[in-house]
Structure formats: C-alpha cells, structure tokens
Length: 499
Image 1 (cartoon, one colour):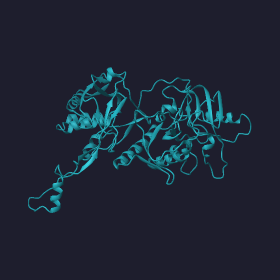
Image 2: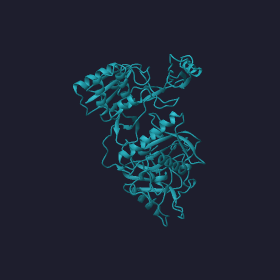
Image 3: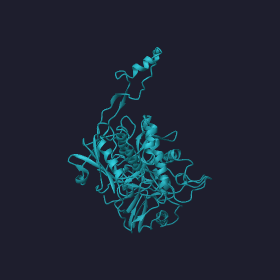
C-alpha cells in the first residue's frame, strides 16, 4: 500500500478541465495533474537523479484509486485579459545593426506591449459530506491518490517524500497545496474501471517523464484517459442484466436548436456517424453494426439513445443529450481506444475555442455536444436514471421511444408475445406482465404515431411500433432497449417508479 495525500490550503482548487476560455473547473484532480506537479518540483529544484528514478517508478504503476469529495461547486469566474508569455525574445547580434523588424519584435515582448488574451480562472470548491472526518482537515479538503499494490523501496520512498515537501501547487500557481506520503489512506471513493465510460481522468502512463522533457517548453498535452467510478457493490444473483453495459456514455447538448423525442432517428444517426468518423480506423464492427462486406455484424454492437426530459409535471420531451450503450461483452480495450479518441478530439475542439464536438447531418441538424462529466447534472443525463444501477435494478419498466415489433401482429395476444420475445433477445427472462398502448406511461413523451417509422431494407414493409410496459419477476439492470429499432434509439425504456 502506498498513497499520496494532498491538502488544498486555500479550501479550493484552481485548475481548468479543458482549454476553453470559459473553462470548467477540474475536480477531482486528475492523476496526471499530480504527476505534473511532482515533475515540476523535480525540474525546478536541480533534477536530482534519485527523484527522477522515483518518478519513473511512479509512472510505471497502474492507475491509482482516489479518496476524494465528489460533491463540489464551481465558483463564478470573471474573464481576464492577461499578457501572453509564449513570445520569444529575438536574438541580437553585437556586430550588426538591428533591423526595424527585429526592433519591433524585441519591443513586443516588453510587459506593457505584450498582447492580452482572454483567460478564465475556474475554481472548484469541494463540499463536505459524511466522509468529512477522512477527506477534510479543519476547513481544508484533502485528496488521496492510492496505489493499493505498490511497495516502494526505501530510496524511492525517500525521494517521493522530498518531492512532496517541495510541491507547493497543483494546477494554477494560486492553488496552494501541502503533500505527503502515507501507508494508511481512507477507503477510496473512486476506482479505475476497465473500459468503462464513467468520469474520465487523465492517466500518467509509462514514458510520461520523457514526454514532458521532449515537449518542453511547450505546454504538456494529455496522452491517455482512464474511466473512474464508485467502488462496485456486490450484485444480487437474482438481478437480471441486459446485453448492454450499464456504464452509459453520455453527451450533453451545448449548442444548436432544441429538438423533441420525435427527432430520435435524426440525432442517433448523426451521433453514430460522428463516432465512426472519430474512432480508430478501420471502424470496428461493434460500433458500425456491419462487417467489412456490409453484412450485419456478428455479436453485440453499440446502441445510440436519446436522453429527453420526461416523467415529471412540467416535462416537454425535449432532448437534453444523447447516450451510447456498449455491448456488455465488449473488450475493455476497445472502449478505451474509442474514449481516448473522443477525449482527444474534444480537447482539440476546445483548443480552437469551438463549443464541443460537431453533430450534424448537413441539413436539419447542427448541434454541439460534449462528453458530460459534471458531478451535478440533470437526472435525464445521469446514467442511473436509465439503468437503475447501483440501486440493484427495477422490476417495472416502460418505453420512452416506441418499441418496433419484429412482425405485424395478426391476432389477440401477438403484441404481448412479441414484447416477451424482445425481452428474451436482450438476455432477460420474459416479463410476468406486459402491455402495449399508443400512449407512453411517462409524461412529456409523444404518442407512438408521432414517431416516424424506422427505415429498414429497401422495399421492406414498414414495421409497427408501439409504446409498451413490462413487469419482471426479478429486478432488472438497464439500459433496457427492446425491439427491432433498439440500436437506433427506439424501444428505449426507463424504470417506472410509484411516483
């Protein structure tokens, strides 16, 4: 067991989570942020060889767990215009008279003549919770980075102790900290998740120190990200699971006109196209849904779902974002490769001051979206609202987008039989009760006839779609997507509570 404790001496953390002018504050601090602070302490104080060996040992470890307050607020920041520090001083020769252009460049680097660029100074203010005794010291929040299997040698431990003593900030120079090593940290509140789509934190990774040296004096860039989430709780063996993984990837809309649930096919097709463009090439079958020869892919593949404001008194069924449901049996490395590509594309967009990732179809849709990693977000954009995890599942579910039946019903009871068959096709036991209706059980959802039909093969007859509800004998963990249009966002269900 080895851990590093960080105490924020000002009671808050000043660091930007992205490159935008109106940046969002970063919380929790990323492991790579910690490594950058330790590396800065190393390079600024003589670059001792033992400290270097300790940093190389640290970057060779697996991703750490974190004990951190997960509730926080962002302080309102005013945009400031600050001088640019990246201008180079031109070299003057004593043997030659400087040219007018060289003089102009030299004068430009004087403080009063440097150009000013807009910059935000986002601040995260952690909020104390029931773990205050472990994660707070007086009024100062404390974060622990924990490597449960690490056993440093005496020399490595001593070198990291020295680096910790010399580390005065994490993030902005105003974000003052005190650091120390410990073998008895509190229980972690965030752990790495294999291939998961939870909150993404910048990882350290082997070769990070050499990468920083090679890039100096340019700003460091992120190399990889790791998914983090709460420690897993034991699941009841009687809980049903679908073929989709509950770690739903969520995008929130940050630009473009508002659309309703009737636009499901429009936005999910655009999301699929964007992910196929940004993903590692050639596009994997689990993402495209097709093999190289255009035939349907074998095995499970991703589903793209609309996330709309529904189920309460004032619900209007307007889309707030989109989700991606990954196949449960997908290789975690495949998810990580896609997420790294998405995070890299999102950072590139922010560096150009674009508002997130572009989502468009060339005619009707022009959205800007970003991966939603906010701690405080609407219920609609929280995966647990659609999966009922970690609440251990729900027994009663109802559709938010209509379920597309595999064939047209011909007699009484056919619809219920097709609903049961749709449940079995996604890995569940048939529901003990189910029913269909043109109207959804949730407020704000349009009727089934207001949704356009799902296009299938050319010449194929249009398939019937209907809203439905089902009650299972055992709790079910979502996401629950049923019917022939489930990969395009139709047949999306949500837990139906007493409220």
